[in-house]
Length: 258
Image 1 (cartoon, one colour):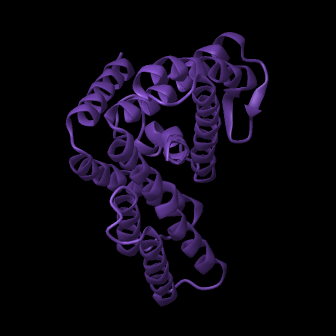
Image 2: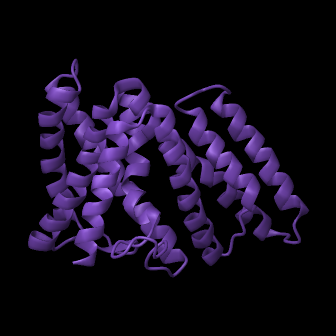
């Protein structure tokens, strides 16, 4: 019951924020979300053995997030400056040898894994409107739900047993069938100018991206010997646990509508 109630509350909050906020205000909320996601990410990679330079990497992540929808400064500049600052912090630390490369790699990944995708979500709102954001989020949610129940009913073949033992090929097939159909139905009304064929293709790409995002986060948590990224959301784990598929699907959707 806790999981259901918190899930309904999160869905209602997300709907209200996307529907009523301007892109600028939504960016503010997204930056807070990025801080929470980054905090969980830093904890996960620390469990793997990496130490992320906290402030340098966080600022690079937030900068990348803010520059995607509102390019006051080129996002490439933000990434390069963040890379230089991160590398300098790592070089000044007391860790040497392979640990230096591990720390740098984990730090460089953060703006790409968290900042750019969340920025893409706000950019979708700015470019295509609030309806497009809801179509994306709804498609990801429907895909996850279809995969869960199809896998529960018919799942026999593990999709990636070493990374996520509960995911099955049959569950993935359920996502590939249901999500594009929902996107075609919703996109016809809310994404004018896109043909059903284009919407169906976009739906398939979102499912693929979502599955990869889910497996990627599972791989990180398994390497760190963690079940959840945090315990922030009752019954659901952490922020990264809830947006893992969206982090990979949002850039795909943004690229497609651009």
